[in-house]
Length: 272
Image 1: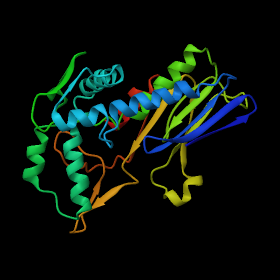
Image 2 (image 1 turned 90 degrees about the vertical axis):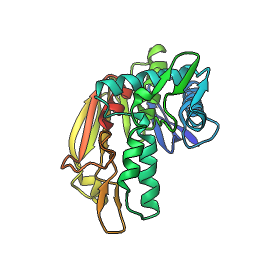
Image 3 (image 1 turned 30 degrees about the vertical axis):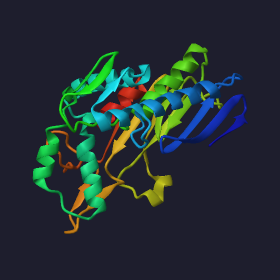
């Protein structure tokens, strides 16, 4: 679902995508909706692990995918780069272990260390080999998920369309991830607030701890202060996993915000 309104000469579009929302403010009379929809569609077909007909779901089911789309191939290539850059802390192949944590807490059971150890053997992204002809899992049971970089990837793709059309001013946002260029409709450089993670969500209006100016920059925030799991013994776990141990992190670090010229980089490395 989407709707378009016009504020001064900035077109505002908003709607639902990837299980969250998007909001675009574009200083142009051109209509980019078809191109933007095609970005969303391409990513959905390539990397939506919640539907059966996507490439990623097909790979996760069978361990092999012939003739991957350019979108899927590009996401794999970038993910491999972030995996190396972050020394494995960003790993799309953590998917089996993330799924196990989610399902076990839904069933209110306790995490079994033997299962965690066996699943940990599947989580190296080096277990995924790919080229233009095929994507192949090198171990049985390897599964991947791109949700930790999908929003950033979509923002970069939209920004690229706008840049090619020589749009000077825009703000594109998906689920809190943002990329901005130029100035807003008040002729000021775009400003984005970063929430203070120590202030409850009910007091959100008072919770800004930093205002960041974004010009040709992307901002991504990743935090473990909103979501917790609680097991049947009452132990509380943050929702961010350590890719080296397979367990949720115990840390006093509540939130990370990352600035980059690339939304995909900001998204992936803030998660890392």
